[in-house]
Amino acid sequence: MTEMKVVPLGGLQESPYKLVLCYPKFSDREFEKRISELSGLGVSALRFQGSKEIFGIKVLGKGCVGIVVSAFRQNERVAVKILRTDAGRSSLEHEASMLKLANSVDVGPKLIDVSESFLVMEYVEGLLLPDWLRGLKGRGKKRRLQETLRALLEACYRLDQIGLDHGELSRAPKHVIVNAQDQPTIVDFETASNHRRPSNVTSISQYLFVGSDLSKLITRITGPIRRSALMTSLKQYKKDRNVENFQEIIRTVIPVWR
Image (cartoon, rainbow, N blue to C red; front, side):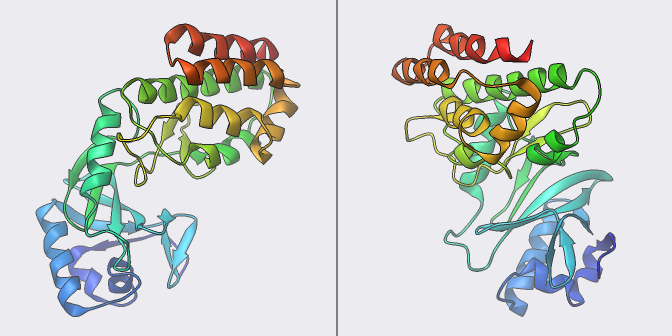
């Protein structure tokens, strides 16, 4: 099965849909509990689409903690994260609290609701950052790249300022989605924490500009990055995460975009 499929809650009892809802270990008791949770959250149907597959069913994402699918809630398109039955945690409450904190500085998909097994959030339409970057073509692509990366760095700075560390931005190919207006959204706060020193700006900068496959794609458009100057500014920012040191990072990379 490869096509997009919309399945109302009543239809989820059929295989293979019920297996996705209770992945990877199915039980009738857990399934009934989860259907009740979805109903309580106002979710009316799941929409199976995306680049990943489970039992031949298309999903938006698949990780160690959860499966992400598209859904409908009160006729609104949303994204729903489903807690895996073998996840090393009992609920998605922590991720919801981290996402709510990120939302307070306009970062991440908007949190809508949460239960023990489900996290309901804004559906972000777009491409993962590497795919978006590969699709950049034509006049103005350097400027588009400039504005998107600036917006991404600024979002990371806001997270640093509230003491929230995403935790996965040094390897971020699956954690940034860019929409049709070139606006980036940082997603997946399952390993985020506000109890460790935040390193969002330094992590994303190293991923974007130093040594990753994505950095090579970026330099094809921007030209060489002054890496020694960037590392110096990142080191200073790490000592003191103030706005002046952040702006120095921006000034270090902006000249190659002009």
